[in-house]
Length: 212
DNA sequence: CTACCGATCCCCT
DNA sequence: GGGGATCGGTAGA
Image 1 (cartoon, rainbow, N blue to C red):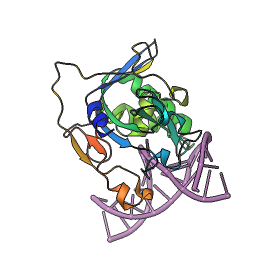
Image 2 (cartoon, rainbow, N blue to C red):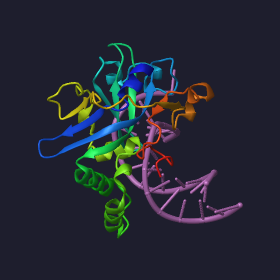
Image 3 (cartoon, rainbow, N blue to C red):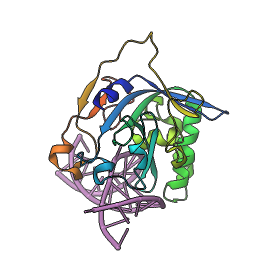
């Protein structure tokens, strides 16, 4: 699982809906395990929400949180054993305009209804640096139009509209840094401090304050 | 700079 | 009915 997380860094995430293509280089991920991992959605065994976590390697596990965000995971364990890698950030490579549109579309659908909110959101997105468009799991979900219907998709199928590609052979294996996972304090100190977050040091697209 | 707060909805110790 | 693998804005030191 940890090895799979490291292997994902540098790989490409691709959204190909037939009209536009969006791709990004994965620069930040987190590993989540099964029942023993108190930070994992699988901590209480299989449920309707986390069923895909128990699927075979290579499927997408998509979940919604806080009523407005969808997050993408790559299932990485053998069938029956829950494990998933949360994709927290990518560096946009192709389809930057489509990512801005997707961010705007999702933001308008969910943000509080102030009178001038749409104009302000559009202005903010227009100014936003490319590296921030898919920085953080919620932002990535919006930029790549991740939907609940993507749950269970085969990310290793070259014909899939949402898929992964290996890091290009010509591209060197990236350096990898690690540290505690984000936002899992509820799991208790032991699991919250486990160094299961991995990132490519120096990437401008890292989540939180690191990339700013 | 840090700290808190609200938004918003599906699923569940 | 509670709460969350988040985000961006605001208030205050």
